[in-house]
Amino acid sequence: MPRIISPLALALIGIILFGDGAYIHAKAWLAQVLLERAFDQSVATGEVVRPWSWADRPVARIEVRRIGARAIVLEGASGQALAFGPGHIRQTADAGERGVAVYAAHRDTHFRFLRNVAIGDLIDVTRSDGKHFRFRADSSAVVRFDASGIDPAARAAELVLATCWPFDAVASGPERYILHATLIGTDE
Image (tube, rainbow, N blue to C red; front, side):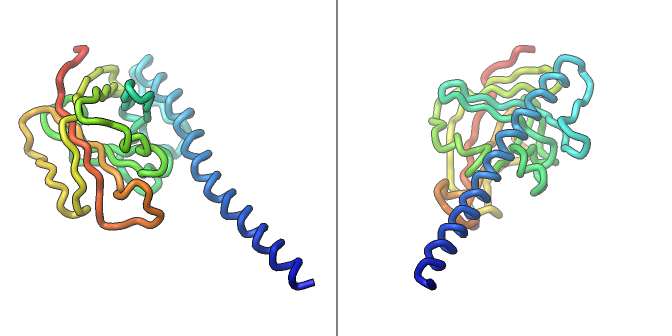
């Protein structure tokens, strides 16, 4: 009897752990669908539209067309915001403005695509006010979380996408992957 219970218990634990992992990815996917709708309405109407009552405001859409990646960015980078999408780090510039706009997200959900972005790739950012900016990825680095090398006083319009490193790690660590891009065009 104990020989039968052990495999059943292990199978049940495995199913629970798999379900927990699948839930995280399903929540991230559904949140992006709802955020995309709210973002499109914000751009169309000029009004702030939230996908649900307590959600942070969607502020931008990031697209890397070469690899078919896109994500809606939320205002702020709290743990709650990052559960649903990339976050715009407060006290950094808005995309397209002078200075560095910094967006951060989890490596296993919304910024999973960063592993496939190559130097020279075009990154399109559309803000919720409808302004569109095109950046070119020009460098990447792995840095400690407290030593990013990001210059907040940059004179040009720059973009940084940041996530945890290494991409395949299970536990969090002190290193971050930083993808830097420079503004090359605008639809203004």
